Image (cartoon, rainbow, N blue to C red; front, side, top):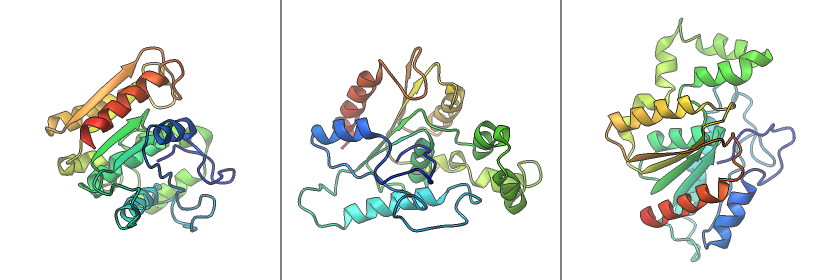
Length: 225
């Protein structure tokens, strides 16, 4: 589940290239999801106003397609989910919307589990006109707190059944580590199997410590898949 790439420039399979390559070389069947409004996928004009929740549906649909594919090279009893940045938010949503669909999940440098924090971080400072459309459709956290509570995966963390591993750099100024610590605390309070690995000095995209993070990822999948 890839992170944000402007759909206007996105091409099929773009994002997570090094992760795709390494996992495939290690024997995993890798399916990269082109979300709606990306490349040749279907158009959904309301997706952005609806906080891009459709991307979660797309990942769930991809997993269901794998489960029912009948292809002998796919072990349909062992599916892992990996997402980074915005795709990390898709991971959170998928775990609460479709518990049991995947067997383990990994998130790299994920966005906040509170959508309003993502809007304040990425869209409002840029003067994105979409913010006004979102608030017109759904209200603000002050005027319609019920909506914003219900759209957060943390509201439903009790549903999660799969182990979750999160990687986050301490120098990430795109998606602050504090967001992930809040999410991990909620998972832990609910008694869920969650592990946070932090990487001192690493930024949002991971550099020198990326091999370490992927070694830990593959060991995690080896244990749980």
